[in-house]
Picture 1 (spheres, one colour):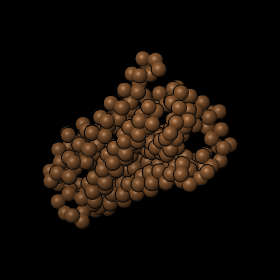
Picture 2 (cartoon, rainbow over the protein chains, first blue to last red):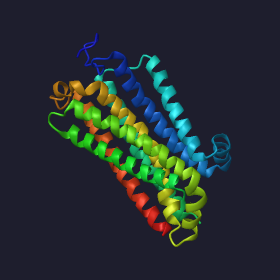
Picture 3 (tube, rainbow over the protein chains, first blue to last red):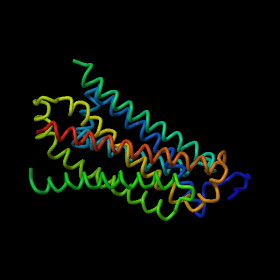
Picture 4 (cartoon, rainbow over the protein chains, first blue to last red):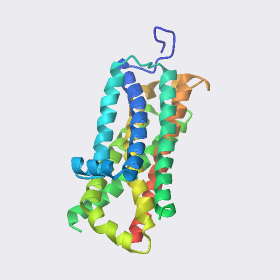
Length: 120
Length: 159
């Protein structure tokens, strides 16, 4: 499928669906990066963990609720912005999400390995 | 442990395994020369739903029971690292999975019909999207298996 610029569109049969998929891919990258950062920072910075506990009853619930809210809000914000939704743009966003996911998981495992075995 | 919490724990394991199996099916389905859009849509959607259900059931069990009853036993036992490393990493890496799964399901839902026509050229954008979906569904599967094995280690550490 060709768009008005002659590029392959990632939108398929539904233009809004393609834009949401593209926006969700970018939003998920930001969300995964934030989950990783908040997880590590909250463990090193007790006031942040205490705030998550006092606000959401448990730090894990706080991280989950914040992550879901950020993902949904950013997906719709990116959807409203005129992001490129051609196939090449979507491909780059998906590849970016893959690497953010790999690095996020490695950072979390690495951090807790350090906390469990290398810190007294 | 109450029977309600036992049911939640079993549901968490079953939904988690179903989610991993579904994304393994998506991974293998995408590697086919001619992927079936219907199969990919079905598997990715149910995989996403299963992971979210595993999130909620496991989360309730973790917050209501694990932290107050199981965690102290593990920390006082012979394998405190089972909590310090495996439980801590498992509960936080698990937070990532539904978002990765949602994106894979959304992209497959809106793009899979055109997979046969747009993946013919190895350097084409359609091929690149398919390759990224292969990597993402593979990542969800591998992380899911690691989380499952972490759960086995944590269960073993309590006994």
